[in-house]
Length: 495
Image (cartoon, rainbow, N blue to C red; front, side, top):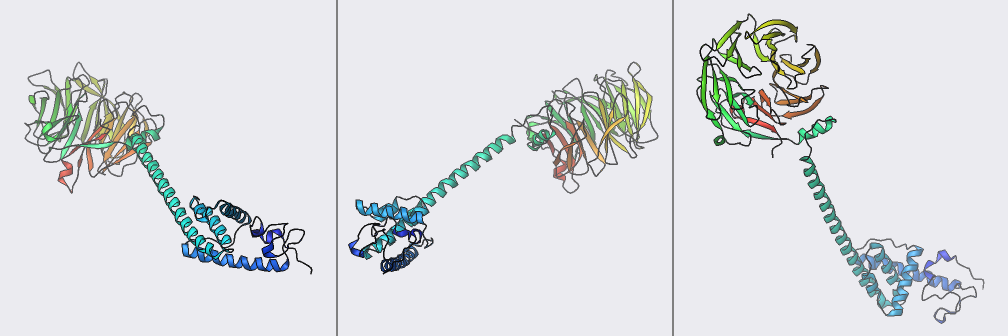
C-alpha cells in the first residue's frame, strides 16, 4: 500500500515525542517505514490524538481561568515535549515544572506539555489541569509581584522626581540674569509674607536705607515699623501723632532710623525709629500728598493738594520751610536725582518738568520741559544706578528715559489701568510696576521684556523694592474688602 509521506512541519508534535521514535520500530503503534515516518493509518491515529489533546488543553485551560491559544508553535511544542520527557525520566511531575516557571509563556508551554502527556494516560489529564491551575496562579502571583515591585519603583521614582522638583524650586539663585527664563523661574519660586496691624487702608510703604526696617502708613493715622523677620502685629513699632491720613512716608537715604511722614493734617513729621518718638513737627501750607528726600538727607520736598511744592531744611529749627513754589497746573510726584543735581515734577498735563537744583541757594530753576505722555503723569522713579528714570501715567504706559540725554529709550505697556506705583530693583535689573489691576508686573530694564507677573487679590497704590535684596513690599486697595487693604505684603524668598 502506498503511504503518504507527511511534511515534518505538518505534525510538529511528532518531533521528540516519547510516543513517536523516528526511524525505529514501535510495537505499540505497529511498524514504521524505513525512512522513519508513520504509515497513513498511524497518521490518522496521531491526528485524532492531536484533536483530543487540543480539546483537553482547552478544557484544562478553561478550568484554570487562563487565556491562551490552542495553536502551539513548533518551538514551544518541542520545548514542552522535551520538558515533559525530562519529567517522565526523572519522576518529576509536570506540576512541579510549571511551578518553577516565572512567565505566562512558560505557563503555556508547561500546560501544553502536560496535555500532550495526558493523551497517553487519562490520569495525567487531571495532573495537567492541576498543573495548569498552579502555573496560572504562579504566573499571576509573579505578575502581581512584578507589577507591585514596578509600581513601588515607579512610585519611588515619582517621589524622587517630586523631591527633585521641590529642591529645584528653591534653588534658583538671584544673579545678573543672562537668560531671562532663569529670572522668570526665580520669581516663580517666590512667596509672600504678610504684616498685619493697620485698621484701615495702607497708602504707602518704604524700606529703611539699610533694609532692616519696613514702614507703612495709611488712613488709620498710624505708622507701623516692621522688622524684616517680623510678621505679627506685636512685633511692630507703632508711631502715633498724626490726626489725619498719612499719604506718603520715606526713610532718610543716609540715616536708617530717621523716617519722614507727610499727612493730610498739614504737617510733616520726622521720627526716630529707635525710640519710636517724633523728633520734629513741621507745619505746612496745605494737605500734603507727596514727599521726597535730597540725596544727602538734609532737605525734604513736600507737595500738597493745592499744587504747591515746599522745600524744608531739616537743619533749621526755626522756619524750616525755606521756599514754596505755587503752580497753576496739577503737580503729582516730585523727586531729586541720585546726584542732587536735578529735580523732577510730574504734572497733570503729561509734561515732565526738569529743574536744575541750586544747592547753595536751596532752590531750583527751570531746565527743560518734556512732553512725556499725552495724559496725567502719576509717578516718577529714579534708577538706583543713575542711568534712567521711569514715568508712569494715566494712559497705563511706563516710559523709561535716559537721564543724561533726556530721551525715551523704551516703554512698558502690559497694564490696562492707570499706573499707580513703580520701583526699580536695587541692582537696576528690573522695574516693578502696578495699577488698579490686581497684579505686579516685573519687567527687564535693558530690554523691556516682561519677566514675571505677580497675581494678587487687590489693586496697588504703593510698591517699594528692598535696597539690597530682591524683595518687593507693597500695599493695595480692595474696594470690596477692607481687610485686604489693611495688610502689608512682601514678595520674595525668605530664609
